[in-house]
Image (cartoon, one colour):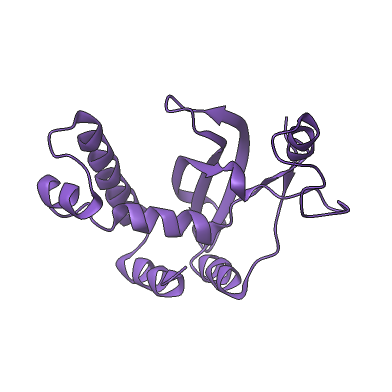
Length: 176
């Protein structure tokens, strides 16, 4: 299994983390391994969860759990690596071996929430409008399935976060 590292938070990512703490929400993510989908996209597969605890007893009262993917371009050299740039010519076996030492980087809560908000952004429009806005063919079953998944994300976000919390997080993530 590939090694996983946690990157240092940017100021914006830290503000999102702080906002989640104020909301009584914890974030966790588990690495499920490297995968390749049906379209030959190699990626790191994750399972994240947001859990809201009640204030008095710190007992979970709601959870939001989903899978999440990051491309291999998010991987970083292991801590202490001598060079962040490839010491070998691309296309060589040595270069491939060097890339295989890279670590999966744990996605921050800000990255996951930002992706969820982007996916949810057009899902309240009609399917035809959504297809036009995002460049999908409205006669495609695959597009319809993606649209429905985006609609489910909207429902999940509404169930888990209060309206004011969503607005606060969207403001913190604007332009992220």
